[in-house]
Image (tube, rainbow, N blue to C red; front, side):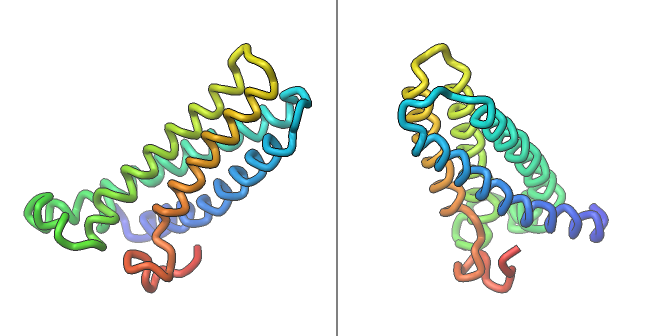
Length: 157
């Protein structure tokens, strides 16, 4: 992959994380304070935006993982998974980050699907809060923050 294209995708992916976190917080807050109110169009729109941005960031992440220096290439250059699993930074990018983000994407989609079900609105709100909150926790744990070993020197965006 061209280094300038990689840089563009990496920055897009990094900035997109903040959009996903913001949308998750909005969706969680809206459903958490909903009480007994109906599941309204803005709840559905927030969920749709959340799943769309999450899917886009996951696809960009897959491209970065496969073509970039921190994913598949790490496994290839290290001589296999056993060598990668011994190094915590390589393991984070080659295995842990992508696996956790896939789990988060699935949880977000399940939360969005719960909103489409023909169930009581208070149950819809409760289920979306649960699935979105778990996804938020998984994402927060799996981001290479600057204060972690994997994110050292990477910056906040």
